[in-house]
Length: 211
Image 1 (cartoon, rainbow, N blue to C red):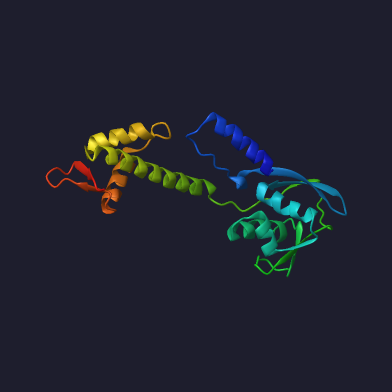
Image 2 (cartoon, rainbow, N blue to C red):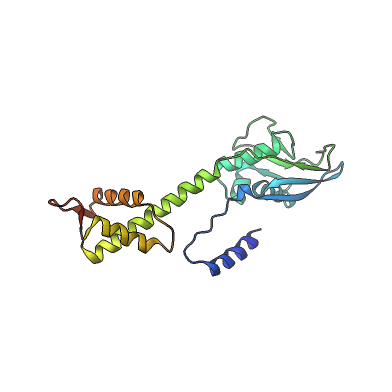
């Protein structure tokens, strides 16, 4: 799966230089075959769940910390996916101790005796607001880009009026994204408080770069 991601990333980078590719793995789905003693079944799972289950192809038993280390996920993500596989409706994994919650001291093993009347089942994963997180990350990246653009412009121009600074900033960033005028104004105010710029005492719409 990692190789597929890398191949697509290389392809994407040949098409654009100014956009950032963000993978939302929890929105991906996989169809994997589970070979249980009663019968073989098809499991429809998320990318995270599939990655966790595939670990048991090479290990009979794994601890919480071993799973977390191998998947390289956060505590919250590991708890969610292990709960969906061992504590919910479909218990694909057996958990020790057999409780309804996930703890860092738990151990897990593949449940060979699992069965269901259906041959194909979908194992849900409790949702998280991934979209909100991605939007927050994008906003953060854009704030840095606006800051860098304003500083570059003011470093070369030394003194500049508000309207001209905003227009030059929009022109510079236009290839990457369409910056919002309000966002630029906010970043100018922030740079003033951080002593990168100062307002002219006689003309509040004129800015000076502080070297």
